[in-house]
Image (tube, rainbow, N blue to C red; front, side, top):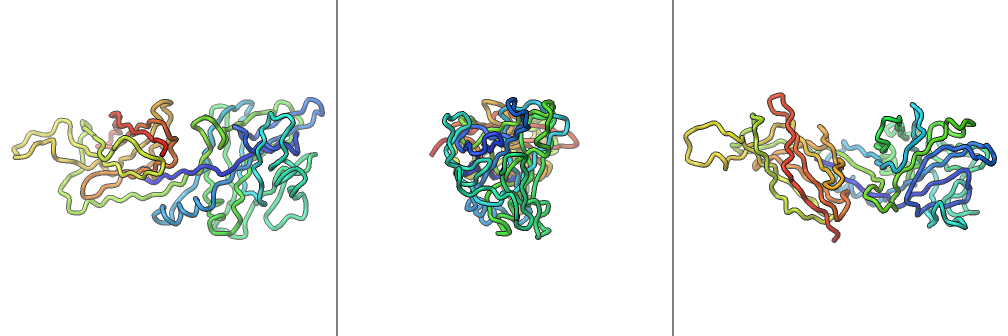
Length: 373
Protein backbone atom coordinates (compact mmCIF):
# COMPACT_ATOMS: atom_id res chain seq x y z
CA UNK A 1 0.00 0.00 0.00
CA UNK A 2 1.08 3.53 -0.64
CA UNK A 3 -1.50 6.28 -0.94
CA UNK A 4 -0.94 9.72 0.56
CA UNK A 5 -3.33 12.67 0.19
CA UNK A 6 -2.97 16.40 0.73
CA UNK A 7 -5.47 19.23 0.41
CA UNK A 8 -5.18 22.56 -1.46
CA UNK A 9 -3.82 25.71 0.11
CA UNK A 10 -6.05 27.82 -2.14
CA UNK A 11 -8.55 27.65 -4.99
CA UNK A 12 -10.92 29.98 -6.83
CA UNK A 13 -13.13 30.20 -9.92
CA UNK A 14 -12.81 32.96 -12.52
CA UNK A 15 -15.72 34.04 -14.75
CA UNK A 16 -15.52 35.71 -18.17
CA UNK A 17 -18.89 37.38 -17.48
CA UNK A 18 -17.54 39.03 -14.32
CA UNK A 19 -13.95 40.04 -15.10
CA UNK A 20 -13.16 41.46 -11.63
CA UNK A 21 -15.21 39.14 -9.40
CA UNK A 22 -13.32 37.07 -6.84
CA UNK A 23 -14.65 33.76 -5.47
CA UNK A 24 -11.78 32.60 -3.28
CA UNK A 25 -13.97 31.48 -0.37
CA UNK A 26 -16.77 29.94 -2.40
CA UNK A 27 -17.76 26.37 -1.51
CA UNK A 28 -17.77 25.53 -5.23
CA UNK A 29 -15.20 25.58 -8.02
CA UNK A 30 -16.50 25.24 -11.54
CA UNK A 31 -15.79 25.07 -15.25
CA UNK A 32 -19.08 25.80 -16.97
CA UNK A 33 -20.33 27.18 -20.30
CA UNK A 34 -23.25 29.54 -20.81
CA UNK A 35 -24.73 32.07 -23.20
CA UNK A 36 -25.50 35.40 -21.56
CA UNK A 37 -29.12 36.31 -22.25
CA UNK A 38 -28.51 40.06 -22.28
CA UNK A 39 -25.63 40.09 -24.74
CA UNK A 40 -26.12 36.68 -26.41
CA UNK A 41 -22.37 36.23 -25.99
CA UNK A 42 -20.97 32.87 -24.89
CA UNK A 43 -19.33 32.83 -21.45
CA UNK A 44 -17.13 30.40 -19.58
CA UNK A 45 -15.64 29.81 -16.16
CA UNK A 46 -12.36 28.20 -15.13
CA UNK A 47 -10.94 27.24 -11.76
CA UNK A 48 -7.49 27.41 -10.20
CA UNK A 49 -6.12 25.11 -7.49
CA UNK A 50 -2.77 25.18 -5.71
CA UNK A 51 -1.06 22.75 -3.32
CA UNK A 52 1.76 23.45 -0.89
CA UNK A 53 5.34 23.15 -2.13
CA UNK A 54 6.54 22.10 1.32
CA UNK A 55 3.99 19.28 1.55
CA UNK A 56 4.83 18.03 -1.95
CA UNK A 57 8.56 18.12 -1.20
CA UNK A 58 8.08 16.34 2.14
CA UNK A 59 6.12 13.50 0.55
CA UNK A 60 8.61 12.96 -2.27
CA UNK A 61 11.71 13.37 -0.11
CA UNK A 62 10.64 11.62 3.09
CA UNK A 63 7.71 9.29 2.46
CA UNK A 64 7.89 7.85 -1.02
CA UNK A 65 10.08 4.76 -1.28
CA UNK A 66 11.72 4.68 -4.69
CA UNK A 67 11.16 6.97 -7.64
CA UNK A 68 8.21 5.28 -9.33
CA UNK A 69 5.28 7.37 -8.12
CA UNK A 70 2.15 8.92 -9.55
CA UNK A 71 0.17 12.02 -8.56
CA UNK A 72 -3.54 12.39 -9.23
CA UNK A 73 -5.85 15.35 -8.75
CA UNK A 74 -9.19 14.27 -7.33
CA UNK A 75 -12.23 16.54 -7.32
CA UNK A 76 -15.72 15.58 -6.22
CA UNK A 77 -18.74 16.60 -8.23
CA UNK A 78 -21.40 18.89 -6.73
CA UNK A 79 -23.52 19.37 -9.86
CA UNK A 80 -23.06 18.13 -13.39
CA UNK A 81 -25.51 18.68 -16.24
CA UNK A 82 -25.74 19.52 -19.92
CA UNK A 83 -22.70 17.44 -20.90
CA UNK A 84 -22.10 16.42 -24.50
CA UNK A 85 -20.70 13.02 -25.31
CA UNK A 86 -17.18 14.38 -25.61
CA UNK A 87 -16.97 17.04 -22.88
CA UNK A 88 -13.36 17.32 -21.78
CA UNK A 89 -11.58 19.15 -18.98
CA UNK A 90 -7.98 20.26 -19.41
CA UNK A 91 -5.54 20.92 -16.56
CA UNK A 92 -2.52 23.18 -17.15
CA UNK A 93 0.15 24.47 -14.75
CA UNK A 94 -0.43 28.16 -14.08
CA UNK A 95 2.11 30.77 -15.13
CA UNK A 96 2.19 33.61 -12.61
CA UNK A 97 1.33 33.80 -8.92
CA UNK A 98 -2.23 34.61 -7.86
CA UNK A 99 -4.06 35.67 -4.72
CA UNK A 100 -7.01 33.55 -3.58
CA UNK A 101 -9.01 36.45 -2.12
CA UNK A 102 -12.03 36.25 0.18
CA UNK A 103 -14.95 36.67 -2.21
CA UNK A 104 -17.91 34.48 -3.01
CA UNK A 105 -19.94 34.25 -6.20
CA UNK A 106 -23.12 35.67 -4.66
CA UNK A 107 -21.58 38.49 -2.65
CA UNK A 108 -23.19 41.84 -3.40
CA UNK A 109 -21.38 44.08 -3.96
CA UNK A 110 -18.89 41.65 -5.42
CA UNK A 111 -15.47 41.25 -3.81
CA UNK A 112 -12.51 42.16 -6.01
CA UNK A 113 -9.66 41.45 -3.58
CA UNK A 114 -8.27 38.35 -5.26
CA UNK A 115 -7.81 36.48 -8.51
CA UNK A 116 -10.41 37.02 -11.22
CA UNK A 117 -10.81 36.68 -14.97
CA UNK A 118 -8.88 39.86 -15.59
CA UNK A 119 -6.45 40.01 -12.67
CA UNK A 120 -3.99 37.81 -10.74
CA UNK A 121 -3.80 39.73 -7.45
CA UNK A 122 -6.87 41.96 -7.17
CA UNK A 123 -8.87 44.21 -9.45
CA UNK A 124 -6.42 46.60 -11.10
CA UNK A 125 -3.28 44.71 -10.03
CA UNK A 126 -1.23 42.25 -12.10
CA UNK A 127 -3.37 41.59 -15.15
CA UNK A 128 -3.09 38.23 -16.84
CA UNK A 129 -0.85 38.72 -19.87
CA UNK A 130 -2.49 38.66 -23.30
CA UNK A 131 0.55 39.12 -25.54
CA UNK A 132 4.31 38.71 -25.50
CA UNK A 133 4.12 35.32 -23.83
CA UNK A 134 7.24 33.61 -22.46
CA UNK A 135 8.26 30.32 -24.05
CA UNK A 136 5.65 27.54 -23.72
CA UNK A 137 3.10 29.90 -22.11
CA UNK A 138 -0.26 30.91 -23.56
CA UNK A 139 -3.79 32.17 -22.82
CA UNK A 140 -7.21 32.03 -24.45
CA UNK A 141 -10.21 34.34 -24.23
CA UNK A 142 -13.06 35.78 -26.28
CA UNK A 143 -14.17 39.34 -25.82
CA UNK A 144 -13.18 39.96 -22.21
CA UNK A 145 -9.40 39.97 -21.84
CA UNK A 146 -7.79 37.62 -19.35
CA UNK A 147 -8.77 34.14 -18.25
CA UNK A 148 -5.41 33.04 -16.87
CA UNK A 149 -2.01 32.07 -18.24
CA UNK A 150 -0.61 28.57 -18.37
CA UNK A 151 2.18 26.35 -19.63
CA UNK A 152 1.14 24.18 -22.56
CA UNK A 153 4.53 22.50 -23.06
CA UNK A 154 8.06 22.26 -21.68
CA UNK A 155 11.61 22.25 -23.01
CA UNK A 156 12.26 19.24 -20.77
CA UNK A 157 10.87 16.17 -22.50
CA UNK A 158 10.85 14.10 -19.29
CA UNK A 159 7.78 15.99 -18.06
CA UNK A 160 5.80 15.91 -21.31
CA UNK A 161 2.92 16.18 -21.62
CA UNK A 162 2.97 18.78 -18.87
CA UNK A 163 -0.83 19.05 -18.90
CA UNK A 164 -3.60 16.54 -18.24
CA UNK A 165 -7.09 15.89 -19.61
CA UNK A 166 -10.17 13.99 -18.53
CA UNK A 167 -13.27 13.24 -20.59
CA UNK A 168 -16.78 13.16 -19.16
CA UNK A 169 -20.07 11.73 -20.40
CA UNK A 170 -23.58 11.76 -19.03
CA UNK A 171 -22.99 8.21 -17.72
CA UNK A 172 -19.93 9.11 -15.60
CA UNK A 173 -19.95 9.73 -11.86
CA UNK A 174 -18.63 13.20 -12.65
CA UNK A 175 -15.74 13.07 -10.19
CA UNK A 176 -12.30 14.23 -11.34
CA UNK A 177 -9.50 11.70 -11.17
CA UNK A 178 -6.74 12.89 -13.48
CA UNK A 179 -3.05 12.05 -13.63
CA UNK A 180 -0.94 15.21 -13.13
CA UNK A 181 2.34 13.40 -12.36
CA UNK A 182 4.39 15.29 -14.96
CA UNK A 183 3.07 18.61 -13.71
CA UNK A 184 4.03 17.78 -10.11
CA UNK A 185 7.47 16.58 -11.25
CA UNK A 186 7.99 19.90 -13.01
CA UNK A 187 7.12 21.77 -9.78
CA UNK A 188 9.29 19.52 -7.63
CA UNK A 189 12.33 19.75 -9.90
CA UNK A 190 12.08 23.54 -10.07
CA UNK A 191 11.56 23.43 -13.85
CA UNK A 192 8.55 25.70 -13.34
CA UNK A 193 7.28 27.56 -10.29
CA UNK A 194 4.40 25.89 -8.48
CA UNK A 195 1.49 28.28 -8.98
CA UNK A 196 -1.00 25.44 -9.07
CA UNK A 197 -3.04 24.55 -12.13
CA UNK A 198 -5.97 25.96 -14.07
CA UNK A 199 -8.84 23.76 -15.23
CA UNK A 200 -10.84 24.67 -18.33
CA UNK A 201 -13.07 22.97 -20.84
CA UNK A 202 -11.41 22.00 -24.11
CA UNK A 203 -14.18 23.68 -26.14
CA UNK A 204 -15.35 27.10 -24.94
CA UNK A 205 -17.15 30.22 -26.19
CA UNK A 206 -19.68 28.46 -28.42
CA UNK A 207 -22.54 30.58 -29.82
CA UNK A 208 -25.05 27.82 -29.23
CA UNK A 209 -27.25 27.29 -26.19
CA UNK A 210 -27.14 23.53 -26.73
CA UNK A 211 -23.51 23.70 -25.58
CA UNK A 212 -24.41 25.19 -22.22
CA UNK A 213 -23.32 22.99 -19.37
CA UNK A 214 -22.50 23.08 -15.69
CA UNK A 215 -19.50 21.32 -14.12
CA UNK A 216 -19.31 22.20 -10.46
CA UNK A 217 -17.07 20.58 -7.85
CA UNK A 218 -16.59 21.04 -4.12
CA UNK A 219 -13.81 23.44 -3.16
CA UNK A 220 -11.38 23.50 -0.24
CA UNK A 221 -13.96 25.62 1.61
CA UNK A 222 -16.72 23.06 1.31
CA UNK A 223 -18.62 22.11 4.45
CA UNK A 224 -18.84 18.53 3.22
CA UNK A 225 -16.41 15.60 3.32
CA UNK A 226 -15.47 16.15 -0.34
CA UNK A 227 -12.66 18.74 -0.62
CA UNK A 228 -10.32 18.39 -3.62
CA UNK A 229 -7.16 16.39 -3.07
CA UNK A 230 -3.74 15.70 -4.52
CA UNK A 231 -3.22 11.96 -4.16
CA UNK A 232 0.25 10.43 -4.36
CA UNK A 233 0.49 6.74 -5.15
CA UNK A 234 3.56 4.57 -5.09
CA UNK A 235 4.36 0.88 -4.81
CA UNK A 236 5.98 -0.20 -1.54
CA UNK A 237 5.06 -3.88 -1.88
CA UNK A 238 7.47 -6.30 -0.18
CA UNK A 239 6.89 -10.04 0.18
CA UNK A 240 9.78 -11.26 2.31
CA UNK A 241 8.81 -13.80 4.94
CA UNK A 242 12.37 -14.43 6.11
CA UNK A 243 12.68 -17.48 8.36
CA UNK A 244 8.93 -17.80 8.97
CA UNK A 245 7.48 -21.29 8.65
CA UNK A 246 3.96 -19.97 7.96
CA UNK A 247 2.50 -21.01 4.63
CA UNK A 248 0.25 -19.28 2.10
CA UNK A 249 -3.49 -19.74 2.43
CA UNK A 250 -4.87 -21.99 -0.33
CA UNK A 251 -8.53 -22.41 0.64
CA UNK A 252 -11.42 -20.03 -0.03
CA UNK A 253 -13.12 -21.08 3.20
CA UNK A 254 -10.95 -18.78 5.25
CA UNK A 255 -11.16 -16.66 8.36
CA UNK A 256 -9.37 -13.31 8.11
CA UNK A 257 -8.80 -11.03 11.10
CA UNK A 258 -7.21 -7.60 11.41
CA UNK A 259 -4.58 -7.01 14.08
CA UNK A 260 -2.82 -3.83 15.25
CA UNK A 261 -6.04 -1.84 14.98
CA UNK A 262 -6.59 0.32 18.08
CA UNK A 263 -9.72 1.70 16.42
CA UNK A 264 -8.96 5.42 16.84
CA UNK A 265 -6.34 7.46 14.99
CA UNK A 266 -5.31 11.07 14.57
CA UNK A 267 -4.93 12.57 11.07
CA UNK A 268 -1.15 12.51 11.54
CA UNK A 269 -1.13 8.79 12.33
CA UNK A 270 0.59 6.14 10.23
CA UNK A 271 -0.46 2.59 11.08
CA UNK A 272 0.69 -0.86 10.01
CA UNK A 273 -2.35 -3.14 9.97
CA UNK A 274 -1.55 -6.84 10.23
CA UNK A 275 -3.77 -9.32 8.45
CA UNK A 276 -4.04 -12.74 10.10
CA UNK A 277 -5.66 -15.59 8.23
CA UNK A 278 -6.32 -19.29 8.57
CA UNK A 279 -8.59 -21.97 7.06
CA UNK A 280 -12.05 -21.86 8.62
CA UNK A 281 -12.14 -25.66 8.47
CA UNK A 282 -8.54 -26.90 8.79
CA UNK A 283 -7.65 -30.39 7.61
CA UNK A 284 -7.62 -32.88 10.46
CA UNK A 285 -4.16 -33.97 11.58
CA UNK A 286 -2.33 -35.04 14.73
CA UNK A 287 -0.49 -32.17 16.38
CA UNK A 288 0.22 -30.80 19.85
CA UNK A 289 -0.86 -27.19 19.20
CA UNK A 290 -4.29 -25.79 18.36
CA UNK A 291 -5.18 -25.57 14.69
CA UNK A 292 -6.32 -22.02 15.30
CA UNK A 293 -3.02 -20.64 16.56
CA UNK A 294 -1.24 -21.11 13.23
CA UNK A 295 -1.21 -18.03 11.05
CA UNK A 296 -1.18 -18.10 7.24
CA UNK A 297 -0.12 -15.56 4.65
CA UNK A 298 -2.66 -14.36 2.16
CA UNK A 299 -1.62 -14.95 -1.48
CA UNK A 300 0.45 -12.30 -3.21
CA UNK A 301 -2.64 -11.21 -5.17
CA UNK A 302 -4.23 -9.63 -2.10
CA UNK A 303 -5.29 -6.00 -1.70
CA UNK A 304 -7.07 -3.66 0.68
CA UNK A 305 -9.71 -0.96 0.24
CA UNK A 306 -11.08 1.78 2.52
CA UNK A 307 -14.75 2.84 2.62
CA UNK A 308 -16.52 5.65 4.41
CA UNK A 309 -18.78 3.80 6.81
CA UNK A 310 -21.61 6.33 6.70
CA UNK A 311 -21.83 6.98 2.95
CA UNK A 312 -20.44 3.60 1.82
CA UNK A 313 -18.28 5.45 -0.69
CA UNK A 314 -14.88 4.08 -1.61
CA UNK A 315 -12.11 6.34 -0.31
CA UNK A 316 -9.20 4.14 -1.44
CA UNK A 317 -10.08 1.48 -4.00
CA UNK A 318 -8.49 -1.93 -4.57
CA UNK A 319 -5.46 -1.45 -6.81
CA UNK A 320 -3.08 -4.17 -8.00
CA UNK A 321 -0.16 -1.73 -7.84
CA UNK A 322 -0.76 0.61 -4.93
CA UNK A 323 -2.84 -1.30 -2.37
CA UNK A 324 -1.21 -4.72 -2.59
CA UNK A 325 -0.61 -6.42 0.76
CA UNK A 326 3.00 -6.94 1.81
CA UNK A 327 4.36 -9.71 4.05
CA UNK A 328 7.17 -10.11 6.57
CA UNK A 329 8.19 -12.87 9.02
CA UNK A 330 5.03 -12.26 11.08
CA UNK A 331 2.10 -11.89 8.70
CA UNK A 332 0.58 -10.12 5.72
CA UNK A 333 0.25 -6.38 6.33
CA UNK A 334 -0.32 -2.92 4.86
CA UNK A 335 0.54 0.59 5.99
CA UNK A 336 -2.10 3.33 5.98
CA UNK A 337 -1.51 7.09 6.10
CA UNK A 338 -4.46 8.72 7.87
CA UNK A 339 -3.80 12.28 6.71
CA UNK A 340 -6.13 12.13 3.69
CA UNK A 341 -9.11 10.83 5.65
CA UNK A 342 -11.72 13.26 6.97
CA UNK A 343 -11.69 13.54 10.80
CA UNK A 344 -14.61 12.59 13.03
CA UNK A 345 -15.70 9.84 10.67
CA UNK A 346 -15.66 6.05 10.75
CA UNK A 347 -14.05 3.95 8.03
CA UNK A 348 -14.23 0.30 7.04
CA UNK A 349 -11.39 -1.89 5.74
CA UNK A 350 -12.04 -4.52 3.08
CA UNK A 351 -9.55 -7.21 2.07
CA UNK A 352 -9.63 -8.79 -1.39
CA UNK A 353 -7.66 -11.93 -2.21
CA UNK A 354 -7.43 -14.19 -5.25
CA UNK A 355 -7.29 -17.75 -3.97
CA UNK A 356 -7.14 -20.71 -6.37
CA UNK A 357 -8.64 -18.61 -9.16
CA UNK A 358 -11.51 -17.28 -7.03
CA UNK A 359 -11.73 -13.61 -5.96
CA UNK A 360 -12.84 -13.34 -2.34
CA UNK A 361 -13.65 -10.06 -0.57
CA UNK A 362 -13.44 -10.30 3.21
CA UNK A 363 -15.83 -7.80 4.78
CA UNK A 364 -15.71 -8.61 8.48
CA UNK A 365 -16.56 -5.24 10.01
CA UNK A 366 -13.03 -3.95 10.42
CA UNK A 367 -13.68 -0.36 11.53
CA UNK A 368 -11.64 2.60 12.73
CA UNK A 369 -12.25 6.29 13.36
CA UNK A 370 -10.23 9.43 12.66
CA UNK A 371 -10.48 12.05 15.40
CA UNK A 372 -9.28 15.64 15.63
CA UNK A 373 -6.12 16.06 17.66
